[in-house]
Length: 116
View 1 (spheres, rainbow, N blue to C red):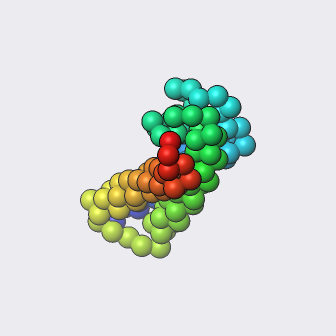
View 2: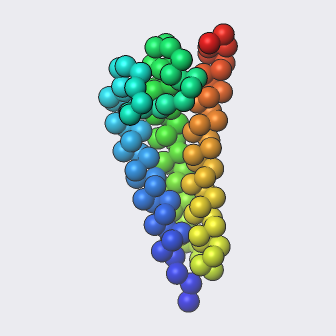
């Protein structure tokens, strides 16, 4: 018998965390550049305009990523794989989501603020 636990649980938990963090960051973005809370990269922390844009944009991307991960976790109810395949799919889907968030936000920052 094949287990569906990891295939469902890992993207589900990560998706829920990303959804909550994305909503919180969208509704309550950090007002000042800081090293504790918000989307923090060298490009986003370069100035206040970059910072404000990056907070809203990245929170939307985080919510999109959470929805992707939640859909992946739901697939575990309908598709069964061997345990190692489940773990691989879960890990790869989470990695793709994180790379998507950072890549699209950094690209948007570069496009919107080419000289900063």
